[in-house]
Image (cartoon, rainbow, N blue to C red):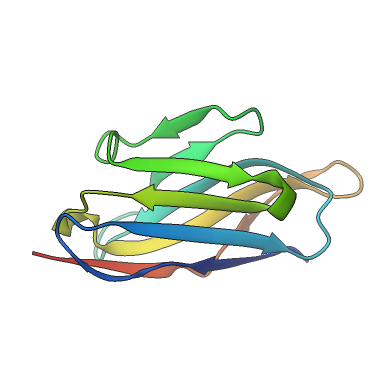
Length: 120
């Protein structure tokens, strides 16, 4: 079973920065797309940023220009650098990967989430 370990969340003041990390472990044959999602209280989970195996990236309009997603394939790790944080960025951030097993079958793995709180 593939597991995701997230880190880097915490409490920051508006305008500050955080770097979230998500490392995949276990029996990994292949990782395709990787991404970060977030869910604020009373709201649906939404995509923050995603990166494909080829390095193409997509960002939510709300974070475009402030966040950068990257990946280290050798470490099976995805990062989210967040700058100029706003109170509305406060949410639980979840890592997700799209992977394949030994039969090349696609499956999805979610992390448990890391809380980001941005004070005004």
